[in-house]
Structures are given as structure tokens and as C-alpha cells.
Image 1 (tube, helix red, strand yellow):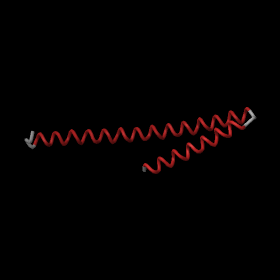
Image 2: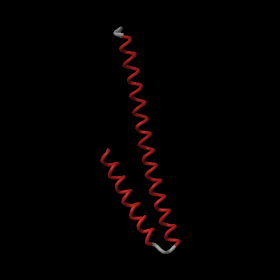
Image 3: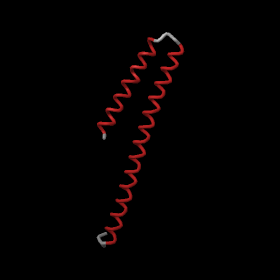
Image 4: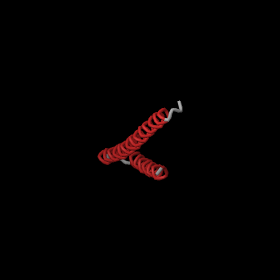
Length: 81
């Protein structure tokens, strides 16, 4: 999963870099505007993907905290504290 995300980021950054180079050499204002819109689209897509990853991590962290509390309670109920 991590390798997939790294691959996704590498592809995204390559595409943004390609668009940036295209923007620098482009003379037509309308094409420059379209290139900026594409760069913005790719960056927003990456941010959404990152937000999704953060939500997943938060859910996992919540699950771990619940399990830790359950273990503490079970430990207390066994009279070992």
C-alpha cells in the first residue's frame, strides 16, 4: 500500500513538473491559463488523496485507543492492578 502511494505521488509530481515546463515555454495566454488549471486540478487531487490517508490513520488510531482501553479494563477486572 505504501509503495502504491509513493508511486502515485511520483507520477503526480512528474505530471506537475511536465505541466510546469509546458507553462514556461508556452506563449499563448489561453493555453497558459489551461495549464495552470490542470496543475491546480492535479494538486487538488493530491490533497484529497492525502486527506483520505489522514482520515484512515485517524480511524486506525481511534481503534487502537479503544482496544488499549479495553485491555486496561480487562486487566483491572482480572484483579491484577
